[in-house]
Length: 204
Image (cartoon, rainbow, N blue to C red; front, top):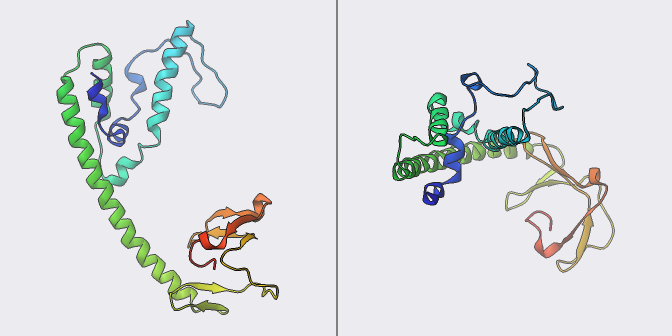
């Protein structure tokens, strides 16, 4: 049995979806609108644990569900629910070998889709990056180096220039091409410390 579960976690996560809650009855009483507060009651603690296991599993795969649309892969939710239900009841329609073979083949399909998506994104990002750099190079005060690096001096300093072997403390703001901020030492209230001989090109 254990070998059945050695297929790619990515394939399994993408394969599983959550839905069709109205297909079976449950001993849980909840409000119609989900809230951050617990509104459910259970007959026994064991029922609560059982429900929590199902809910936890659903939350675990929830983050992968949107990937189906990105990769152009859709699976029949009813068949997925049937597969889970049948197996838990001890009458799965596939043998362990068939399950593993099917998921391994699906794993390969996922890998191909991921590789294709990465290649498409790489081309798209390259086009967007070139457009951004071409436009940014025309901005007043921007200097373009021989390597293509672009920078502008916000405030010129007149202090001693640090050596490559020095460690410096700096404040910085990191943004994407669209202006989305992904890091900000100023907001953290603590400058970052870097040895100059270990930073990315552009810092030195």
